[in-house]
Image (cartoon, rainbow, N blue to C red):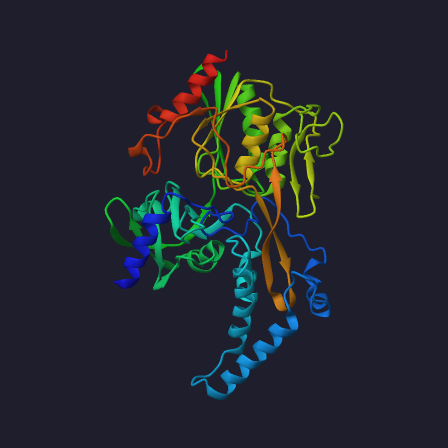
Length: 434
């Protein structure tokens, strides 16, 4: 009971402010936030040099090692129970990164890392829900439930807070490990998820059988007035191809205006979002950048990154294709990371109106650094910026037209177009821009 009371107090603080902690379709493989590949460039080999020279501002490794040895001698002499030395060592490293006070920087044990390095193929054995995590409280919130999945059949709703999986509390655990190590599993096996439903305060146990889930990353249809509608649930490795095919199909049907729905989209891999922007924008747009970043002349900058030294990758349009029609992008507080790259680029060039509510505001990049013995760290390494130089981290993108979703729709698994007031506003915006 005491544990539940602590969880509930945390929920009151953190339920409305969620932090997306990666590619978060339940049961899916690792998404490295904005970066779709590990950067293995030798940076993980710098530990030895840190001991050789203790520059001002660096950790005093000699003092730290001596203190650890002292603590270990106390353990050896007085500790009542058997010591699990591997576990102790892992927690030394976990504690070191935890001390950075960055919720996105994490140490992975060999077992944890093994679970995270599977390919993101859009299929998995899980329960079919999308989740996010509060950086302030560690509480995990269901943001989307896919129709026809075990989660939907068990009665899970958007807004439910995940309290336990089996007998283990999930609050504060790294979200990707919750997905990989607890919710995902072998096809046909059962998982019990306990959720807290905020509007009633009830704890609900849901027993579900894991099964193969195909993630619908892109869905499209033609609406009235020749408005093409494309919904993108995440930026997976397969998403760019699906997105381009959707545009081609809608253009064949006579599309004159387009809506891209990125609500509740937590992001994904950089290659996908760059390829999608490249397909929409012409290759020769010029934009003034107040940060005075040196860019390629007469090339459409899509997004760029800057590390602690002000250096980083730049991505440009180059495919020769463009979609030159009025556009609107639907966004909300759960549109994060790659979703903000997409929305920010179109907004910067004046190519789309953003409709909905302010986006989440995750403008930092994480990279995986493999270490010895199969371990790894995930670390924040850079900011990313829109083409205009806007640093959205902690701020988000303000919509051009602000409209909140009707309250009773926020817990629905499927919102019909006819009742979707945000979609109606986007249609109104496009029809006004004939």
